[in-house]
Image (cartoon, rainbow, N blue to C red; front, side, top):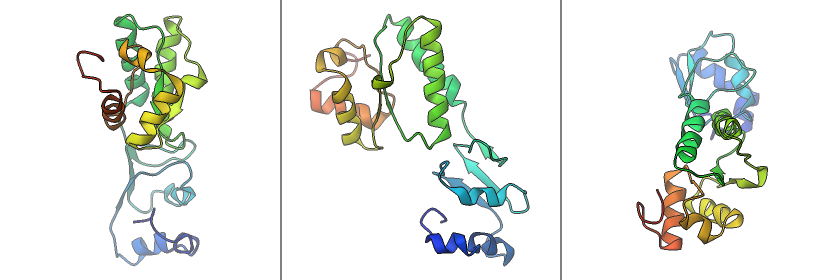
Length: 174
């Protein structure tokens, strides 16, 4: 509701008025990022609101999310256990704190194993299959993908890359 609202809606405080006039009793905020400054209006806890699958660094807001730092570590540890030492990542927007956490956990686990993840090996997939495929191609050639030395985390990005490269899961990629 609020993400698609006109900026004047937020500037006029109407995002708070819909609570105060009892048009809504609470709000689940999905898809919010650090760019959504209006969220600071909810820090006082007077209006029930929960950020779902993210959190905003520096704001004291109710939120529910997975442990993305641990998820990043698990992904990297899986690759390391499989013997991979040259890895990359197709990422989402850095305005999403959970993506920052995912990358952090991924880098931590790799660093503990003595593997450096270069900034150039972390590329923006632009939240699309096409963007994910293009990002992967920009960083790694088909031979690296076929050798399994590159892991794409997002299912849609992996599907697009596999289709373009005519690869099969289990054969060309693990």
